[in-house]
Image (cartoon, rainbow, N blue to C red):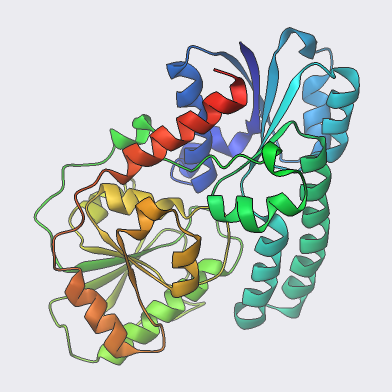
Length: 347
């Protein structure tokens, strides 16, 4: 088995090591290594059609059994591949349900950004939604990152037998970065991204800030943190919230904290920071709509919070003082992902 693995250059940028797409792609790298699959990488400078086409110039794809493309952004290039190399299996990773994802972004922009951004995101929903459809129709297999998206999104584009959910798991190369779980403090962490863009996570931060303000002086033993790309001038945090900025290894903070809060319904795909939190022994504070899109392995570690109720937040913090479930969610998701990929590659 010979595979050409296509992804974009942010994966090899150390600053984006903890970006969700980087971790997901390196999980696929781990699969190829463990299964002994010969894999060559084509790294695109920018996530655009012309760079993919340039990367294929002079290449003979007939020497590969499959082309595995991270994302559904290149319909013209994929059509070129299917027309010129009809015997090469084309496999696409569905990183997000892009149509829904961009609509969520437009909705969030109404609250946290400009009308210009709202219009931009609405146009993006149309373009990327169409790209999802066109790419999925060309692929032999589309691999959504969650079972929820496979059922509620991709199956409307292509027959069910071409849609195989491959859940995200934290690769072994990242598990080595997880420090031993320390004596747990009453810490609750809201993790931003390494690359500012959509206002999704601002909504999560805003909801946490309102709940912390609602506590007043109650739950005095708890400390709250915001990590990553966050501008306190854009959204002022309460005095009880510490803005850490970028951390060389945010897992160190998680290892001594009891909770990670992702209190927003916005965004699709898989919130990879949640699985890291589980591996660090944290409970997850999530909204009801986000909870229903999570895999069962992650739901077991999650606690629902009503973002409009301080009492709900206090009850959730109290539950975080209880021992977390002892199951290995990451190992279960990795086994499920490998089984799905074995089916795709005929192993």
